[in-house]
Amino acid sequence: MEILHSTIIGAGNPLLILHGYFGMSDNWKALGNKFAENFEVHLIDQRNHGRSFHSNEFDYELLVEDLYNYIAHYNLKNIYLLGHSMGGKVAMLFSVTYPELVSKLIVADISPKYYQPHHEHILAALNAVNFSIHNTRKKVEDVLKLYIKEPGIIQFMLKNVFWRTKESLDFRFNLHALTLQNSEVGEALPSFTHFDNPTLFLKGEKSDYITKEDDSLIEAHFSDATIVTITNAGHWLHAENPIQFYTEVLKFLN
Picture: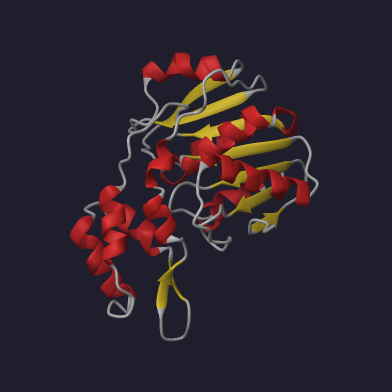
């Protein structure tokens, strides 16, 4: 059994942070260091992402199982669990499956509902990269620019490019598996599942991932949920307004 790669910093109650699709624990380094002033922070790479193991199998049930194995490995109790986007879906499913392990849940800019697959242009861009030809970061960036028009998303993808050897670049994520299983990422939280401990949903003011129509669905699954809007922020709310994000999470956990 392989255990997820993580960076553990700080001391206190365990706060586990799960990144989103195509992300990695490094995306949370700055906020993680802030949270580590009050908590034992676990910045986790999920399977097929960051420095964690690669597998052709990829769905939310497996990601939940990976997290359960991680928590058992480190013998963690009464955890605080924070997940963004895909990581938020994992955090929700984990909490309804193992409510006894989670004392508080924070979900960043994702709802329990089903989402249509919508990463096709990103996957097309990533699959157009041929590292035997595109052997500098600049060449990789030029390929991505042909498909992706948002500079922030291009930079986000480039964070995953690393030197596998002295001569060859590669992506940290398992592009093959993520391409094959792309439809899994939009899956809804199963019906009639619920979590009754305190839950905080944070939504980006400029994001359409959580809408007013989602309120009743959130309440159906999470009986003690609060929904807070992070101002001047889109889907990457923790990066776009880290001060308010940090303040809201700290207020909720304390």
